[in-house]
Length: 141
View 1 (tube, helix red, strand yellow):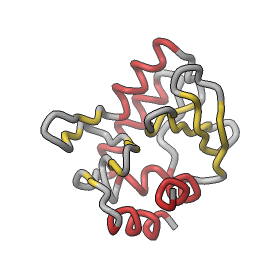
View 2 (cartoon, one colour; view 1 turned 180 degrees about the vertical axis):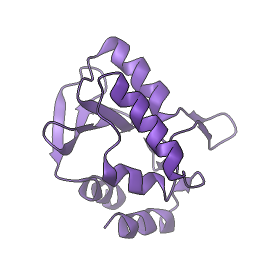
View 3 (cartoon, helix red, strand yellow; view 1 turned 135 degrees about the vertical axis):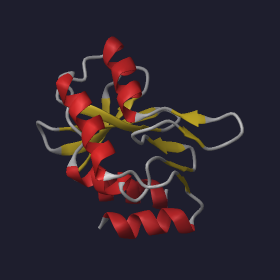
View 4 (cartoon, one colour; view 1 turned 90 degrees about the vertical axis):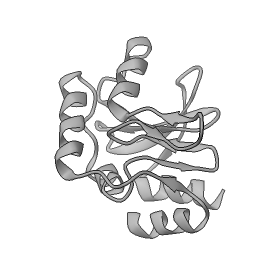
């Protein structure tokens, strides 16, 4: 359950933004879908309703609005980051939800799963059956 992994990340020092409301999440999701990317999956919407942006141990998960989490660090919003990446790499049917130092985390609506891709080559490194498994992998290192 997303709530359990979210609680574990908070206990381990995750920095979060205030929760998103359903309307804001739906607007961002519709904008992505209108640009041929996947809409925000239901599981990730649940996370956004807990934290509209999350940073943990070098990993960043995008919210529906920009999130300043340190003096000079700013996490861009999910719509802007997807439009920027889509300009260089075709994200048709996918949505970029987060990033680490060397990898990007995406959802693939055609396969209904999440995956990590190399940040430079976009080649798939590993797949995750669901968001809970992806977040749990990050939480336990």
